[in-house]
Image 1 (tube, rainbow, N blue to C red):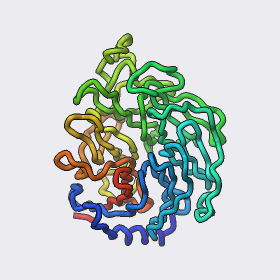
Image 2: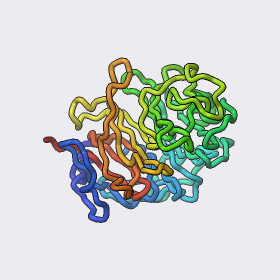
Image 3: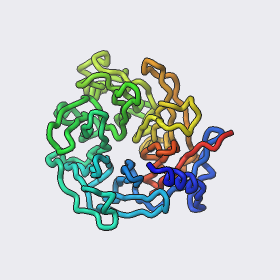
Image 4: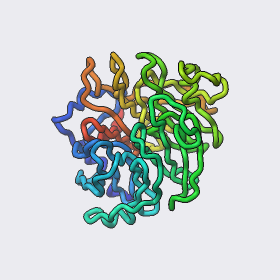
Length: 359
């Protein structure tokens, strides 16, 4: 991204909006949060275009947005889609997930004011909307990773299709299975040094307020099984599907908490934050929906040991939940070219920017 755009982003970081109580957000010393836009309804996954456009998918709004981070202008570049949560950019084109289809908007940054009609890259994916929305991303192998969640709270449907992560070529060909036993991942990223896939997974419901934990997982080889529906969080046997012991499956690297609903996860690859943040993971915890006492609604920071094991996890940003009242729900995180961290919020329809200004 050009130097002028980076400078403009830094200047824009001072923008504030009294309509959203950002002063309630608690951050580590030296960090601040500002508002990039509050005009992005149901904002979910984010991705960058090569010319500096921020693309944002949505959930219930059925739209895909293009946000100019310099002017703050938001354009709707697609509408009327089914849960277009996922967006991924490659070679000038924007890829969009829409439950049973993967779509493509060609040469999108040259056509923001007159966007092309989405074309179908892949059709025929399951039509179920229960966990049917999809976070998508291109991996270091150049393939598009497409998860298919379990079409239920807990069930044992086709394990080669559901509760799995798949990948395909950019033209829709060559679909193959990457990981099994993944109930519903709505966020993943690749380690900047090892290239391994790391992903969040949302734990099953209706086992109580405190069971099971949601998960952060690491894929070390293609085809690994992460437990669903037989085992949750590495050590909790399912009361209905307990035929196979937890020892058969890959345990999570980190238990994130019961029903925190982790969505977007990204490695911090910028240089603006202090050095100890390099290659840490940031996780957007969307928050519990049916727990008697709400939990989540925050950004988690996860530090790893050199071997990829958990060093520690801690809260990085919180305050969207106060005394049981919610005014925001983080859905995704994304590092900016100048090293800040963006947070999408589908509850407030907002994109926030967190930067480091020093102690």
